[in-house]
Length: 376
Ligand SMILES: [Fe+2]
Image (cartoon, rainbow, N blue to C red; front, side, top):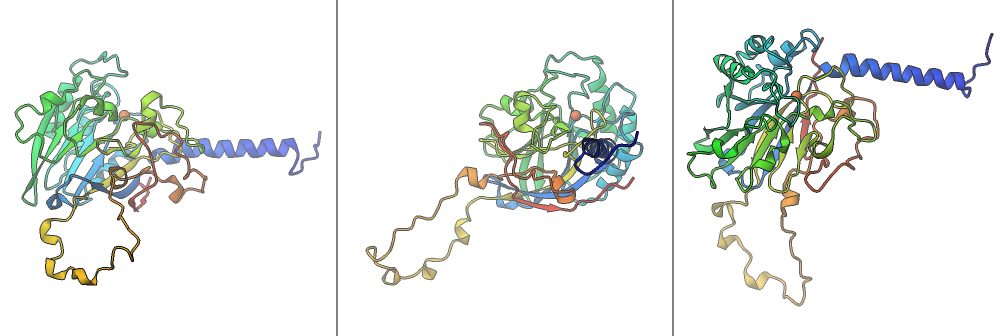
C-alpha cells in the first residue's frame, strides 16, 4: 500500500524521530567515549602563595583499563599525555576496571609519564574492587598488588600519605587519600607527622569528591577528584540520569565548595561504553594565587595624591569599592567538557539547575579549549 507521506504526516515524523535517535545512539556509543577533550583551566586560589602561582598540573582520572574500552583508545590518550609539558602529573584513581587482568598492562602503558615534580596517584573504588559504599571487596589483595605494580612503573601511589614538594623554592603538600568506599580513607593518617599542618599550602587527591566530608577543619587549598564520570550521560535539560543523591552536586568541573574548590574530572575511560554530552577529558590545571598584593607592591606614599587634591567629602558620593568575597574569588565554574564548543548547540549552556547548597556548577572562568580529538 502506498501511503501519502508528507512533511506533516505521522510516518514522516516517526521516521525523523528514529533517524535522530539512531544518530544519537551511534554517536554516544562509538564517537564520544573516545573523543577526549584536551583543555587548560586557570584556577584562582585565595590562599595560594604567589611563589606557587603558575603551577601546572596534568590531571588524569578513571582510566578503567579493561576490555570494554575501544581498542587503542587508552594507549593513544596516554601517549599524548606523555608529551604534555607540565610541572606535576596526578591520577585520581580507577586505574583498572575489574580484577587483576589489566594491572600489568596499565602499569606498562603509564610507564614513561613524567613531570619535574613527579607523577602521583590515589586508588579508586575499582582499584579496591569495591562497587558501592558497603565496601565489600571482591579481590582483597588487588589494591596492594596494583600499588606495587604502579610504583615499579614510576607512579607514586599516596595511600593516606603526604608528599611535600618544592616549586620555585616554595613548599606545598600533596596529600593522597584512599578511596571513600574502601573504608580506608583517613586524612588523619595521611597527615600524621607532617609539620606546619595549618600553614602549608595543600592539594588533596581523592577519588571520590565526597571525601571532603572526612576533612573536618583540615586546610585544603584544592581537592582533585574523579569517580563520577560526569554521569556519562547528560540530557539537554542538564539532567544526569545515572547520578544519585549528593553525587549530582559534584558531577563534573570546578565546584565552588564553601571551604575550598574541588575539581571533578569526567575521566578518560568509562564504566559502560556510552557517553552523551559528557566527553572524557585530560585537563591541565593552572593554579594561580589570588592573595592580596604584597606590601612591597603597594604604591609608595609619595605616589599617592596629596590630601589637598582629594575631593571634599561633601562633594563626592561615597564610593565603597566592592571587596572581594570568597564566592567571587573562588572559581565560579566550570563544566569542564563544553560539548557545545564542538557539537551542535543544544541550548544546554544555561542549565545548572542542579546546584545545591554544597556545590554549584557555574559559568566558566578561564578555560582555554584546545579540543583535540583523539584520532581513531
Ligand atoms: Fe571510575
